[in-house]
Length: 375
Image (cartoon, rainbow, N blue to C red; front, side):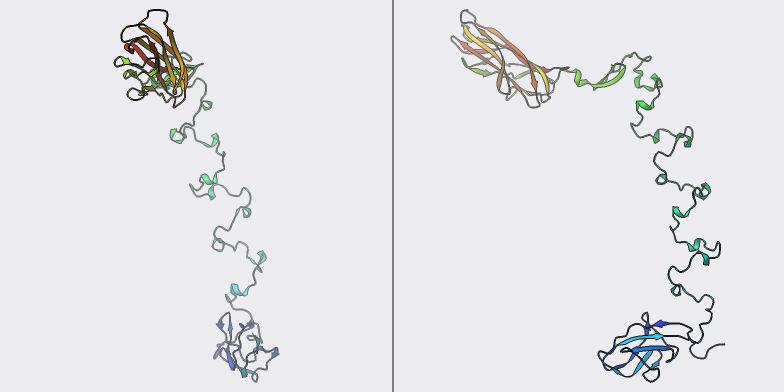
């Protein structure tokens, strides 16, 4: 039967939100969860003011969602609570689809309340079924989406030869440089697989085509590539005097070898310091020849050809002719020096003449050096 007016609430027990007392005010709005509520009647509620339960109808009245006390309240008064009972005469049976989630205590429903097979996909949250909820060995290939198993879901070292189709791997799948000798079977590389057919038979070397930059050699049957620079005595140079050079008597003098016979790497300074600075570390053979005499063709007493290393005399060739009538002599000296990147050598001479001006002859003088290999 339909109700005339507002339908009664059955067993709807609610505690109103706390109400702050306003001095000299009697009427207050009742709310539950910040929403206005209307009690069933003045007799369907319990009100406590200053710790005393109030009498319905005389201590307070209601109109819609407003409660009005019989007298104004004052500062210090406290509305302890307002408890709404709904229709307490009959709880009744809830109508279909009237019990919402808000009316059910959290964690109160367990498996005995579910109908068998009633939990379908629509009632499962996304990503909520983890491995612990799935029976071991229960998922087979029919449950996988085609192409869904990516590398992130394959354990390291899990794909064996048995899982790879025959003739399925080609060169695009190899990492550059990944095929080493350990993965090549013995006697599998034929001459057709080697550039320019450099190997004949199994052990003998055929004619090896040399390049401008490197050589191929066999080291106990193993081919090795060696840069051509290791077979060259460079840096190397040789220089001579452009003309006869006058010298000071009985004094050391640097020879200005200004004309280059060759200079492999441009390491000889033939214009300013007249020195060889190879800049490549290693052992070098250095040689000097100086033709010394007096310009008036008289006897000279003694002379030296000297190799200076980093400004210091390290090797010299010497003659003393004080008892002989010797005008010109060719002085020679050579040595092996260990160079760092910034070491240098220069050519010096010393001559003591009886008369005239000492001279170093251009056609009898040379200065040179080259890097040694294999030492």
